[in-house]
Length: 517
Image (cartoon, rainbow, N blue to C red; front, side):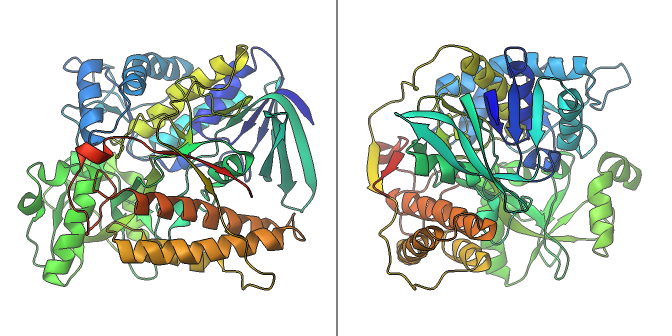
C-alpha cells in the first residue's frame, strides 16, 4: 500500500494527527487490533487543561514540573499548558460530551498533585468519550484508510530515511505501507509488567521497532505505577481513577486507619510515585493489604460520578459506596520512549512519534495525573504539522547519548521465554522499588532472552506471538538497563541502594541509540 502519510496506532495522538494530515494527503492507519481499542479508551479520570477561573497555564506548568521531580523539559511543558486549552476547546466544539455545571461551564475535577480543579471529564470514562469522538470523525473519511489487526513489525529505512513500515495481519499475511512520513502513535508498554492497568495491546511495539531502526530512545527507567488498582483474587485488575481521591476517597489500612499523612504531607493527593511507595511501606509495616474507602461520601454522588468503577467493583463482589476496596499499585504509564523534538521529529529522518510512545521530556520523572490525554492531543496535532512540512531529522541534544549493542546473540537452541516469564521478571525485579542486585539479574536474563529471540526470528519472521514476546523482552531490557544506569531515586524511579535524589550527577536525561544488531 502507499500513502502520503502513515500513522501506526489509533489512540488519541494517532487519530488527532490523522485528521490534520488528511487535509494534505492520503493517510494510512495501521492498528494492531480493533481501531477503537487503545489506552486512550481506558483513561478514566479526564484531561487536564487550564480553563478554570482560578487557573492559568503558569500554574499548570508549575504543577507539572513539581510532579516531574526536577526533570521536565521546560519548553515541552510550556507547549503543553499553552496549547492545551485551545485543543480541548476544539474537542468541545466537535461535540465532546464532557460533564458540565448547572451554568453550562465544564465541571472540573481535581486529582493528585494538582493545586486546583482543572480536569475535564465525562463521568469516569473520559478517554472512551474522546476516542469515540475522534473515531467518528476519522471513520469514513475519504482520505483516511484504516487497516485493522495489522501489527507493524519493522520500519523500512532506506538511505537513512524512514519510508514506511512492514506489517503482519492476524492471519499471518505480510504487507508493506510506503509513505513519505511515518508517525509512531502506538501508545504505551504496560504489558511489559505482570501487573498493569493497560490493555493487552500495550506491548511497547513502537519503542521496539524504532530502536531496531536506529532511532534514539530516552528516559525509559521512569515507569509510573498507578497506586490504586483493584486487587481482588480471581478478578481482573482494574484501574480505580485518581479522581476518586480527588473527590475525597481515602486510603486506609486493614484496621481502617487513614495512613497517607504518615508518609506524605499532601496525604492522599500526593503524586502517584509517592502514593505508590507509601502504600508499599504501609503494607510492609502492617503485614496486610491496603484499601480505598468512599464510605464517608454520599452514595448517590459516588454512583453518579463513577458508574464505570462502581460496576467493576460490583462484578468483583464489592460495593464502592460502602466496602473497603482492596488496592495495590500496577504499571500504568511510561514517561520515556522514542525521543522527539516539540514537533514530533525523531532522530531518524521521516519518522515522527507522538503520545505515550514518544519522549519529549514533558513528564520528566513522573507524569502529572490527566496530562496524558492532553499530551496525545497537543503533540499529535503538532506532529501532524511537522509531518506536513519539509523537515530534517530532529535537532536533538547530542550530550549524554549512549551508543550500545542491544544484545549479544546467544547460541541457537537457547530456550525462549514465554510472555508471562518476561512480565513476571519485570514485575519482581523492576517494579515500584528497585535495587542493584535484582536489576543486574534482570539485565542478564533479558539479554539472554532477547538474543535467543533474535536468532529464532530469522526463521520465524512472521510469527506474531514470537514478535510480541520479542518486543516485550526488548523494551524490558531497555528499561532494566536504564534503571541500573541511574544511580539515584527520582520520581517514579526508586532504588533502595541509592534512595535520594542526586541533582549533582543525575539532573539530566539520558538518550540511547542501539546499533550492531
